[in-house]
Image 1 (cartoon, rainbow, N blue to C red):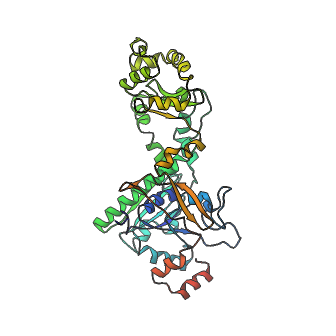
Image 2: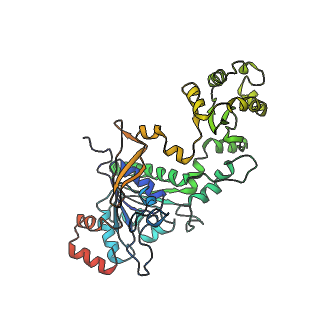
Image 3: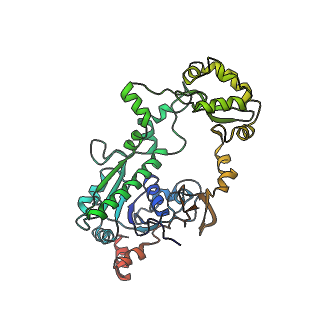
Length: 402
């Protein structure tokens, strides 16, 4: 078999919760060796390691959870306290053997902990340091803790979401965490490519706030240039195109997108109203937008006659259409299973553990995976690989450095 495309890429990551782990998991799925660093057990007996290991009701033995497994497959894990002198020495020995060091810590911490490029370039000039933070590593907010929901709120995502006149709503998933993770994954690859070409690494910064703002894309361009603030539309509709929204059915909703004139004509033909596009009120995009309420009063009773599955069967391949599914319906969807969208992990505490698969296909096949690592499971092997003896590792343990 061909090697995975990122085989040979080695990353040391100080990661926690969502954004950082999502970044490195996408790279690990493609063959990168990711060694995640977590804190050793604390004297106060608090939950050890990444808080994700203890998040949610669904635990997998000690120091593991289904939440953690959702972000950490195909990785290795070590414990290391880099605030201790002996831990700092171990860090430098590990850095000498990797391409990149990533973290998603608070913005003021990487420099204080010595995991930025000015500090680590003294060990390895080609090292690439990628930082995911809430607001960046400089400025008045560098020390602020931040989370996805806050970025959604401040970047306008919540105000754009929901029905007109309703309370602002966040997305049902931490989309900014995921987008930040993907942005950081690109940053790692770009940084390493540059370092391999020049022999010199660098710092690359990704902040949740900046990612949220960047992903406003055309909505931001319209406002910045024309002062146009996109309003919420009923049923999650498009700001300019009608019908391009959720349509009621006998048992729920389907999302119909008549994004082109041809789709509008085919939609009307399929639902039994072939002459509707000839009506001057509904002929073009502008006319349909201006007369949206009148148009919906005509379409809604027709759509309510059949159920969602029937409409999808009639419209599929002719007009962009999708059923509006519950979470359970989406994950139990036979189409998802047929596409290999569900990945089974042979976890020691649950042999049938199931997650969603990577969205990337390699040579037509879904990427496979092994479960996320146990807490500190690879400490000895990772340190041995950079020259530590068993006695030296045991000494580090007595000092609380690992």
